[in-house]
Length: 622
Image 1 (cartoon, rainbow, N blue to C red):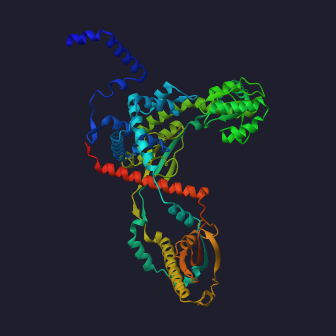
Image 2 (image 1 turned 30 degrees about the horizontal axis):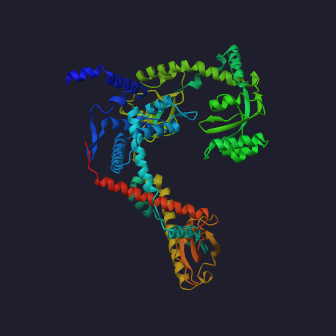
Image 3 (image 1 turned 120 degrees about the vertical axis):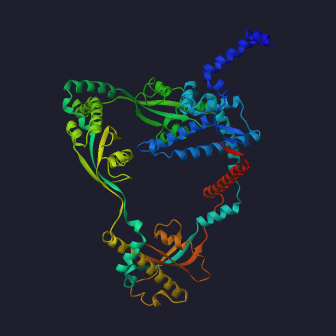
C-alpha cells in the first residue's frame, strides 16, 4: 500500500491535486485548506455541535468594536465585557440552533449557489462587477477567512429563508384590519370644563412638620454626590499656531497650488439612469430612439430616470469636476462636447445616458481673499511638530511635578479651575470620561498626584489634579426646605383638584347642570365644546384627548364623564358621542394596516418557533 501511495504521489492524479491546492491557496487563502483540520477549544456545544473559542472571541471583538464606534470618545474601559461575552454567546447558540434546524429541513446552498450570492452582493462589486480584491478586503475587515465567510453566508441565507417564510406567512382576518382602521379613524365629540388651581388654594396648606416629615422619609433624594474641585492645564495645537511665523513666499506657494486646484475644469451634466426595470436593454434602446427622433432630453429624464432626485430637474446633476462621479461616468462626461449625448454608460448604479450641458473653469479668488486662511493653515501645519514635542514635555514634567505650577511655567500655560466635578463628569474638559476616571484614581484622589496627559479632543491635551475632594453628603434641611415646600404644595394642589373634579362629576351625574353647581359660576367655569375630534387633534391638551378617547361610549343622551390633569388645573370632560371611523378597504391606508397586522403576526409566529427550538435543544456551556 505504501508503494501505491508513493507511486501515485509521482503520478498524474497527484499533480492535479497539487495544482488545485495551489490555485485554492492563491485565491482563497490558507483558511480554505486547513480551516477544518485542527481541533479547537470550545465554549459551548449545541446538540453535540461545538461553538469554537476562536469563533466566539472573534465575534466578541467585533461587538466590542461596534460599541466603541458608537461612543463620542471611544474608551475600552467603559465596555461591559462580561455582558458582551454573554450576549455574543447567547446569539451564537441561537444561530447554531437555527442553522441546525435549516439543515434538518433539507435547506442548503451548493458551492455554486454561494458563489452566485457573493458575486451578486454590491459590497463586493466595483463599477457593477464582482471584484476579487474588494471581496478579500471586506472579508479580512470582518476578521474572517474566506472559507469561514462562505460557510457563514451559507448558514445565514438558509436561516433567513426560514425566517422570511414564517414571518411572511402571518395572516389576520380582514375584520381585524377593519376594526383597527375604524378605531384609528374614530372621532369623538366632548365638552371640557377647566378648574384652575385657585379654586382649591384655600384648602392647600403645607406645614413645617410636613416639610420635616418629607425630608426624613426621602433622605436619599437630597444627597449631594461626591465631587472634586480640580485644577488643570490645557495644551492645544491651535494655541501653538503662529500665523506671523509664516513667510509671504510660503503663502504664495500654497496659493499657487490651490489656484491650480480651484481652476480645474467643471462640467455640468444631466443623465437618464435606467435601473430597476425588467428589460434594461430594451428601455435604453427606447430612450435612444426617442432622443434620435428629437424628443427633449429633460422630458425623457422625468419619465424614465430611476434617479428620482435629479429626474424632477430634467436629470440635471449640476457642475462637477474630476473625482466626483464613478470612473466610467467621469470618463464619458469629459469626452463629450456641450450638447452631445453619450452612448450607454455602465456603473454600479445602473445604465446612464449622459448629456453635457455646459463647461466652465472655476473662478479663483484673489490671494488677498485667501491669505488669512492660507496663513492659518500653514501655521497649524508648522505647529503640528511643536505640539507633539510640547505634549511629550508636558507628560514628562507633569509626571514628576508635585503640582501644576512647574509644567504651566515651562510651557506658558494657564492653570484653570473647575468646581463640582462628579464621577459622572462636569463641564469641559471634564466631560471626557477618561480624564474624570483619572481624577478619581487613588493616586490622584488621595495621594495628590497629577493625572496623565489625556487627549480630550482634536489636538487638545489636558493634565489635571485634585484641589479639593468633597465626599457625598446629605444636604441640610434649611438648604432644601423651599424646594420641598414647593413640591408638597404642587402635590396637595393636584390632589385637591382631583377631589374637586370627582365631586363635580358626581353632581353632574346626579342630573345637575354645570351652571347650577355651587361656586362654579363664580369661578367663571363653563363648558367648551369640541366636535368630532380625531385622536391626533392639536386643538386640545393631549391629556384631555387621551382621557376623552379612553372613556366608555355614552348611552342614549347621557354623557360619560372623566377628568385629566393639565398642569396647574384639572379638566372635567363630558363625552357626548362617538363617531365610527370610515373604512375604505380599497384604499392604501387599509392595505398598510392589513400588511402591518400580518407582519406582526408573522413575527410572533417566528419568535414562538425560535423559542420552541431553543427549548428542544441540548445546550452545554463549557
